[in-house]
Length: 312
Image (cartoon, rainbow, N blue to C red; front, side):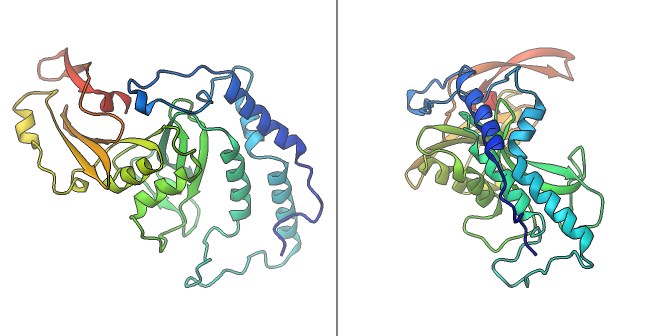
């Protein structure tokens, strides 16, 4: 069965739509705050993706889901109606090309290519998202802390300020790729299309952040900031929760380390609980005031936090 139409698809209009979006992202927004460090200043020529009043959500939709996507959906829907057995033959699981999402992979690839065409802003964010689905599927995931707990899991690279998606990976199950570990490999794959050595900044939570991830991205000229799980900070001696809590909320401890020639800063900040931050962009200074609510004293008071926590 062919996955594409036999007729030639005129994609000139969709390409114009993509060009229109890219043009607006390039020309109509002003760059937001710049980094205080000249070494980490953004060297790209593009401003962050804009909040353009002329572009509606439907405009972005048609720039990403173009005529080629619609033609593919139409062809496959027609074939599914005509044939008696619409299921496609699946490869053996031991085959290196095995893919649980093989039926929708052609469509995903078209949409993914359109996302990648959009020029990326300075600050980027990596996260996970659930596409709601409650039917039967071996790829269905359960994430109890998400608004939609059941569905397909997607890993996204999005604009830190605009929220525009630049790349995605559909989670279809565990892979055999174990070079750096699952979380690190996911982020490296998402950042594969991020321009090198122009000081993009990537922000992520403690699910993704590892020392190896930040080292590998820094070697590519991409700065990283993220909260990190304590068990990923091996061989590092810092004040524990009890010691920090004795100094009251706002207490901090930090360490500077070098791994494979890359300097990293680990900051431990005590708020309602201990929060660990790992960064190749910020150090422990300068400090910024942070208003916090005290449930015991029933009032708001001010303590300090670093640039790392200010940007997360």
